[in-house]
Length: 82
Image (tube, rainbow, N blue to C red; front, top):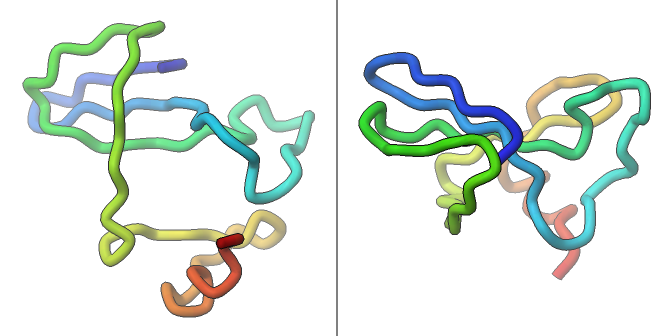
């Protein structure tokens, strides 16, 4: 985990997923290649810790790296390498 922000009712976690990137990272953006997870507010976390995440793709929002616009789920999932 790169950053942890406690918001009371939720905790935001900025992390860098393992595996191959889906798109080339932009070196000018310090958060490029990082993902954000929103967890319950009472999850005890600290920067540098490790978590295992699962993704409910029906609840995921995926965005175009160039425009920042959200992609329809069906279109985004079709673009994910198998």
